[in-house]
Each structure stands twice: as structure tokens, then as C-alpha cells.
Amino acid sequence: MTENTHAPDRQPPTASISTTPAIRSAAGWIGCADAALQNAFLDELSEEEILALPYLFEFWALDHQLPPAGDWRAWVILGGRGAGKTRAGAEWVRAQVEGARPLDKGRCQRLAIVGETLDQAREVMVFGDSGILACSPPDRRPDWIASRRLLRWPNGAEAQIFSAHDPESLRGPQFDGAWVDELAKWPKAQDTWDMLQFCLRLGDQPQVCVTTTPRNVPVLKDLLRRDSTVVTHAATSANRANLADSFLEEVEARYAGTRLGRQELAGELLEEEEGALWSIGGLERLQVEQVPDLDRIVVAVDPAVTATDRSDTCGIIVVGAVLRGPVQDWRAYVLDDASCPAASPSEWAGQAVAMMRNWDADRLVAEVNQGGDLVESVVRQIDPSVPFTKCHASRSKAARAEPVAALYEQGRVFHARGLGLLEDQMCAMTTRGYMGAGSPDRVDALVWALTHLLLEPLRNQRQPQLRAL
Image 1: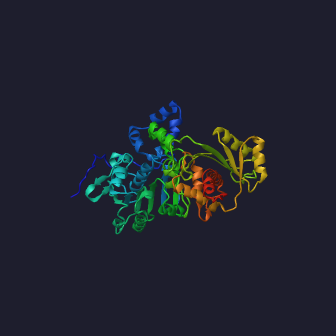
Image 2 (image 1 turned 90 degrees about the horizontal axis):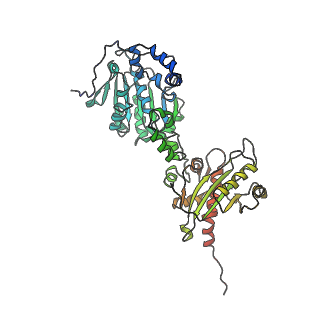
């Protein structure tokens, strides 16, 4: 005996006909038109067409919600929270199982729907506000058979739900398509994904739609690298029309510019290198909303000697410190990243001096290995009175960075929000060197600032001193 918890009244089989429209994402175009054109568009529609219009997803969809053309195996929709990923996945399922008329066969007849848990698959992917049932017109809406964890459409197509906590449950069934949600947060992601691949063996070309907020996990990175994978992407703000204004205002004010915001709102995949001196999670835990009264502030510069399109960025980092109590208890706060890409010496020197004034800083610290006395000379041309300290690098960048990374491990360095580009470079700095693109100019400047504020005083305190008798 089956339990039917959703069995709406159905229209006759010929009540609706599904066709591929000539214009995709046309709602935005109509919405931007004047009132006369909008009224003319609606006046030309029959009553049946007006009733069908809310369910014609190609008309309403955003670009990232529509599957790319071509011969692909997996379509990955990367997006921020609320970017419309679930709606896109549910509508893709509809497009696979539905035919031209309610009882006509579609492209797929047996699909797998995989969520992190059975509850999430059922409540979000099936019954959610953007789930399959909510998206389906009355004459095409599937029945939910709870005892079998299964959806059955009027044309006989079926979709069964699975949990990523139980990859072995995918051993045995076979499907001609699948929709998986939040792959990047599955607890047994690789095992479940592998089992699903063995199940996709029906039909001419089994495909899988993956909707997920990106996270730095191997299964997602491997999938994105495959030639058979296509990707669409959108930030949370792309779906602004369907989100509460107060929600966007709050999360953007709180998380904009942070690594968490770039992952959860911008939908960016933030990667860490093996052996990295800093981690995404570690830096997030050290972010602060408010900075205490500071005893000393420095502006550190890793200068670029040339000024061409291919020149390195000039790293300019502002760091303050609380210098109370024993030296080993002093704490530092990274305040600002004012780095200049491809700037001339006069431009980066002007930016550095401007940061000195903006933050009422006590000293400008700069590496002079490449420019020598020229670095100080350029700064003096902008402001002859700037307190200036030269720094000479005698060890590799990684060797200089490791003692600074230890300060973070001790919980002695904190970050203000909005330092995403600096933090990206930090997560690409490893014990083997810098694994990112270009030069770690921002990290170099950070290292000089923290060395000046925290490491040098500690070294000076520990140096043995002779006493005269």
C-alpha cells in the first residue's frame, strides 16, 4: 500500500502543451519595457496561455538557471545563498521528465534525487518553496509516495530520493538522470558521488545537475576540472528580485568583502593549497567587528620598482598593535589593504603616505631589496617628514612568513573585515613557497608589518645582554 500525500485534481491530458520558447529569460526584457508594451503582450495571450505562463520557466529564468547547450555529462550550478539554485534544479528535473503533453514521455523516466539527508531532500528538493512540487503545473504535478520515498509523474516517470549519508543505498538502482543538491557539504561526498556515477547507466546520455554553494572540497574541485562538466554561476544578488531587501542589506553589510561572504554570497570557490601556512577557517575565526584602542600603527610597503601592465602589485598593508603587558602578550590587528596594482613609484608612494595620514600611523616600513635607497627617496618626495624604516630580506618569502603564521596560531593577530584579496594570498603561501599567481605582494607587506610590531621586539627581549661588574 502506498501513501499519497500530494494528489491534486488533474486537468484533462490535453490541458497544456510544452514547447521550447524562442526567447529565453524574456521576463526581464518585458519587465524593462514601458507599460504600453507590457499591456500589449498580456492582451495577446489567451486565458490558457496566461494560466500556463507562471510554469514556463524558460520565460522567467535567469541566465545561470538555464542549462548550457552542448554535449555534457554534469551541469554544476555554483551560486551564493538564495541565488536560485534549487529552483533551477527542480525545473531541470521537470524538463527531463515532462513531454509535450501531460501523459507524453519525456527524455528521462527514472531519476535519482540526492540531498545531504533524506529530510533535506524531501523538504527542500521535493516539498520546498522552490522544489519540484511547487514548480509543477497541476496537470503535470507528480504524486509523492512517502513509503517508497518516490515521486511519480502522470506519464509514469519516477524520481527516488537518497541521502548522502548512505552511499551504499545507491548500490543497485539505475537511472537515466540525477539531481544532487549541496554536493560540497555532503559528509560522504566522494563515496556517494562515486556510487551515483555507477547508477547513471540508462538512456542515451545520462546527465546530472549539481546545485551547490561552493566549498573547497576535493569532490567538487575534481568535478569542475573534468571536460564533461559545464558550469553556470551567480551571486546571491543576481536573484535580488525574489529576496527580501532587508536580508540582502544585512548579509552584505555583515559579510561583504570577507572570505565567508565571497563563498556564501558571491558563490566563489576559495581554494587552499596543501601545506598552506594559513587556512580559510582559521582566518575567519580571527575576524573582528571592532578594533580596540591601538598603541601603535604602521603602514608596510612591498614596493614594485617598475610600472607596466605586467608589473607586480605594490603591497600596502596597515596594521595596528596593542602593546600592553609582556611582549609575548602583545596583539596586532590588520586594518586595511591599500595595495596598488601596476602603479608607478610615485603612485604607490602617494598611496602609502595617504594611508599614513588616514590612519594616523606612526611609521612607514618598506622592503628595499629591489629599489635600495630609491624606495625611501620616492617616499620622501611625497612627504619628507614620514618616519621611515628600511627592511632587508635575507631569507625566502616562505621562511619569513612562517614566524608570522605562528603568531596567528597563537591567536595574537586579528583581521578587520574586507581583506579578501590579502587572505587569498595568505592561503596560497605554503612551506614550499607561494603557490598563487604572480607575487605575494600583499603577504610580503603584511609580514614586514607584523615583524616590525611583534617579532622584532620579542627577539630583542630574548637577546642575551652583558652586565658590567
